[in-house]
Image (cartoon, rainbow over all chains, first blue to last red; front, side):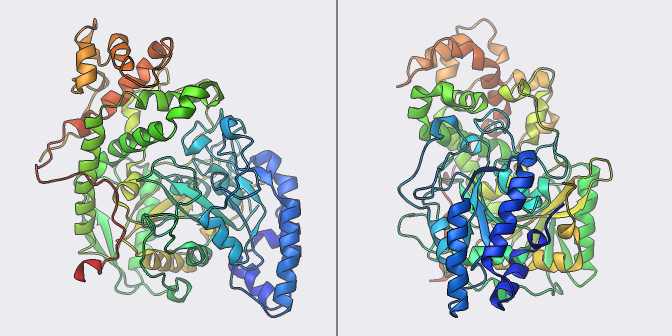
Length: 474
Length: 101
C-alpha cells in the first residue's frame, strides 16, 4: 500500500509545506519508510541517505518556519541516478569497478537542487555506466513496479522505477540515446531530455561527451518544470553549457493548446511501434486537436538511421573514455559493458566521422521540421516494457536464436534527440490491454530551447488525462 | 542522396556486408570467409595496432558482436552524403534567435 504522502506530486507537497500544514520532516520520513518497505521488491535504490535527509529536512522545516521559503523544491525529496557525483556520498555508477567511489566534488545539478532546498534521500540504480545489461552489474536489476518481472528499461532504470513506485517525487536521469525517455516510457512517468547545453554535465560520469544529457524525471510536467528551472543555466565548469537565459518554466504552464501546430511524421517514427503504442499516441494527438491544435505532416528523411549512427558515436566515445578502465579492470565490468567497449575498439575512424556527418543532416532535417510546426509528437519506446532478461541473455548483444534485424529496434526515436541536440519529453499516454498492465508512452520534440513549450503541452495533456495518477500494484 | 532502409535487409545481407574500413579490409583479405564480415584474423591485425591490445582469447569471443555491429552500421556506411556536409561534432548550444545577432 502506498502511503498517502508518497502519492503526492512535488507540487502538491510543496503547496502544503509552504502553507505550514506539512513538515518536510514528515515528508522525508514517509518516503524513507516507503523505501524500506517497498524497495526490496523494486531494487531502485543503491544508497539511501536517511540520516542526511532527515538532517536536511529539519533544516528546511526551520528555514520555512522562519519565513525563508526558497521555492517549490524546498523540503521536497529527490534521488538522482547514481552517476551524478555527490560530495562525500557514495557514487557507484552502477559498477563494481567504481563501487567504493566517494567523490570530493558535487555535480552542478545536485548542487543546484540542494541550493533550491531539495533534499537528497538516496542514489538510484542504473545500467552500469549508463550502458550495461541491467542484469549483471554489481547491484542487480531494478524492477518495473507495474510488473516486477519486467524491466523498467534503462539506463536510468532506478529513476523510472522509483518514481512509478512513489519512492521519490523527483529524480534526475541521464540520456545518451534515450536513457531518460526509455525508463519514463516503461514506467509511465515524465522524462525530459532537454536541449544539449541547457543543463550542465559537470559531475556526471561520461558515456559520450557529445551525446550525454542529464535532466528531470518526475511524475508530472509541473514538477519537471520546477526541476528544470532549478538546474538549467550556464556553468563555467562545463564549456558546453549554454548561455541562453532560463525562462520561468512554471509561469508558462497553461492548459491551452488552441493553435498549437503538431508535427506528425509521415514515416520513420511510427511504423516499427506496436499497434497499441501507435493507437495510444494517435489518441493523445486527437485529444489535443479536439481542443484546437492542428496537425501538420512532417518528414525527417534520415530518421531511421539515427539509432545506428548514434550507436557508433556513443560507443566510440565510451571506448575512449573507458580505455584505461577496460585495460585495467575488465573483470570488474558487466560482461555486456566489456563486450561493447571491446567491440568499439575496432570501429574505424571513418565510420565515426560518417556518423557525425549524418548528424549534420539530421540537424538540418529537424530544423526544417520546426519551420512548419511547434512540436512533433511520436512514439517514445516502440513497445511496452519487456520481461527482465535472463543472466545468460544479458551477457552479450548477440543472442542465440535472434534475428539481426532486431538491431533495428535500437532507439532511433529517441537517439535522434541526442544526435541533433533537440529536446524531447516522454510521458505516459495509456496502458497495455494485455496483462500485466504496462505503460505506453509518447514523446514530444521541439526546436532548441523550447523546453517551456514541451512542458506546456505535456501539462495540458496531463490536465486532460489521468494516466499519471494511476498507481502500480505494489 | 540515397539511403538503404535497414528494415529491408535480410539476415544474410546484414551479415554479408562489405568491409570498407581500411584496417578490417586488410585483415579480412586474409580471412577464410570475407563475405561474412570481419574475421578473427582481421581482429588480430587490428588489435596489434592498438595501444592497449585486447587479450588474444577475447577476439573470438567478441567476433559475433563485431560482425553484428559491422552489419548494423552498413546503412550508415553506404549512405551517400554531399561533399559540402561537414561533421556535426557537437550541437552548438544557441537559442533560435542567436543567428540574428
